[in-house]
Image (cartoon, rainbow, N blue to C red):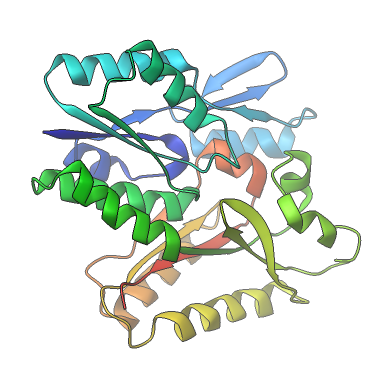
Length: 281
C-alpha cells in the first residue's frame, strides 16, 4: 500500500488527514530564538495573535531531514511505499530535507518525492488527490501521472491586505517590483512555476476580490472535473461563505476553506484570501 506524506503548509483539515491516514510533517516557525512546530506547538489563531503583537518578525524554515527520516522508516518498516507530496522547492527547502532523508535510506526506490511547485490550497489539492488515488489502490506511476498534470494546470491566485509580510519573509519573488509602485494597491498574486508572481494590479481590496472571482469563473465555467479550494488567514466567515458559494455555483462535491498554516501565514499576513483551481478539460 502507498502512504502519503505531506507538510503542514498544505493546510489540510483534521478530518482529511485522519480519513486518508496522511503523515503530516510540521514546518518550523521562529520568534527570535524560540522555534515552534507548525500546528503542534502553535495554532493558526495563536500564531496570528503573536504576528500582530510581536516586535520580532517571525522566520520560517523547512522540517529537518530527521523528521522525514523518522516518518519514512516507520512507513517502510510497516511494508508500505512512500509518496511525499511537498511544497514548492522555490518557496521552501522542504524537498531538499526529504531528499536528504531518502539518501540516508540508500535512496530506497519505494520512497518517491514529488514537488508540487505550489503551496497552501494548491499544494493541498494535490496531496488529497494523491491520497484518494492511493486509497483506491492505484500505483505510484498512476498517481504521479495525475499529479504532474495537476502541477502543470493548477492555478493559485490570492489577494493580500499588504505585501509587507511577503517582502519581510523573502518569498515575494518577482512581485518585488510591485513594492515601490503599489501605493495603496491590492494586487492579485499567483503561484507560477513554483514562485510568487504578480498577476494583476488592482486599486482596492473590494475590486481585487471581485476580480479574483471573475478570473476563476472565466477559467472554470463549463469545464469538467473541476477542483476548487479557498485559503485564507483570519477571515473565517468570509472565506467559508466564498467556499460555499463556489461549491454551489459549480456543483462541486466539495470546496473547502483552508486556514493558512503559521508557516504560510507568516508570509501572507492577516486578511489574506486566495482560490486554487484545477480542471481536466
